[in-house]
Image: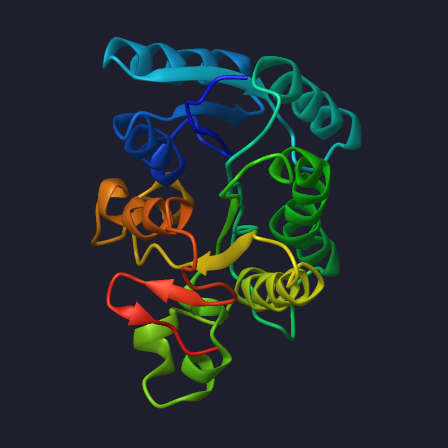
Length: 243
């Protein structure tokens, strides 16, 4: 078993996920680039390797049990453990998402990826994380999932437009994260949520004001926390995000 730290980043073939993989790779980690589509996954891995980073592709559809199980088997065979899992893969479900008119199927689809997919991947990877001396889990959330910000003054400014599928999926993810924190309280796994900010990616039609590199910074910090670092928190670059 190599002493090099091993990470898996889901949805890592582009955008924030790619920059998280690049940032961890620049720190000397070996990074699994989790993505569904082979051509884009291979291109991302090649780009990272061309930059001198240790990257490998992981075929991974977070909505598919067999795909996730195969990904866990691949990492087990390659490294024997996992030091950091970054659950980054996510979808918005498109728009508009007015609660009075949304198709319930949209909500099911978003929750399947943004919440159930995180549970599916996390559970598959927990045995591998248990073999790490300093395991970390980072769930990529968003300030739109903050009930405090959604209900406070200036909600449109801080949390964007009404989005009954996407925003509650992040609130759900935050709540799920805390359940893992409670269950695994007697372990050395540190589990936190990260908000990347309003990043220009294809998820929002590149309307964001932050770069993917900026959006990756908090996740990278949480994936590399020292022993004794925070767990059960919700963080952005400026500090703690209110639940």
